[in-house]
Amino acid sequence: MASKKLLMFLLIASVLKFLLICQSCGQNVTLSVYYETLCPYCADFIVNHLVKLFQNGIISIVDLRLIPWGNAFLQPDGTFICQHGPGECFLNTIEACTISIYPDVVSHFTFIHCVERLSLEKRQAEWMECLKTTRLGDVPINCYRNGSGKLLEQTYATETAQLNPPHRFVPWVIVNDQSLQEDYMNFISYVCRAYKGTQVPEACRSLPLKSSALENAESTSSVCYAGEVKS
Image (cartoon, rainbow, N blue to C red; front, top):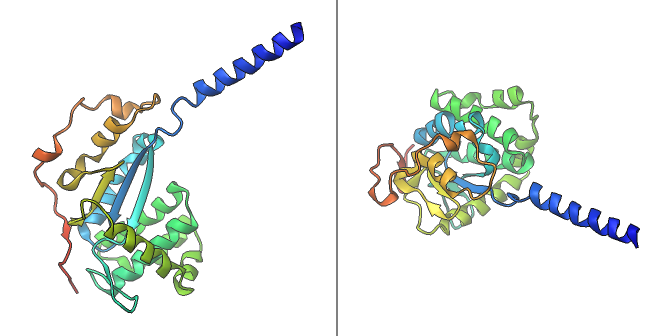
C-alpha cells in the first residue's frame, strides 16, 4: 500500500514538474516576413533590423518565418516575373531552397543575412561566397537546378496571394495574425506584447508597455510597392 502511495506521489510530482517546465510551451510568437531578395528596403530590414532578434535574445520566443517571394507574380505557363528582374527570381529561389533544406532558423538566416548584405552593397553576384562562409555546401544550388526550388516558390506565391489584408508592399511583416503594415519597424514591440509565456526576454522588459498604435502609424520607412516592375 505504501509503495502504491509512493508511486502515485512520484507520478503526480513528475506531472507537476513537466507542467512547470512546459508552462510556456507553444507560447512562441510567429513572426512572418514577406520579402524579395533585391528590394533594397527588404535587405536593409533583414540586415540591420531583423538581425536584432538574434542579438538581444528575443529569438527565444519567436518562430521566425521568411517568405522570399514579395511582389513577384506567376505567369500562366508557371514561370515567374520578379520586380527586380530574373536575378531576383533566382535569388528568391535559392533562399527558398536554403530555408527548406536547413530549417534551423540560425542556419538559414545566417545565409540569407549574408546574401542580403551583399545585395545592399550591390554585390549580389557574389552570393555563392555566402555558401562558403556559412559552410552550407552546394545543396541549395542542386535544389534550384532540379526544380524543387520552383515548387517552393509556387507555394510561397500562393501563400502571399492569400494574405488578408493583401500585401501592398514589401517588407510585409505579420506578428501572429496581425499585419504591421507601415509600422513594421516596430516589430519587436509587437512581438513582446504578443508573447503570453513566462520566459520574457530582458529586451522585452526594457520596452515601453505601449507602442505606437497601428492605425496612427506613419510610414517612416521606404518600401517596394507591389506593381512597380523594375529592370
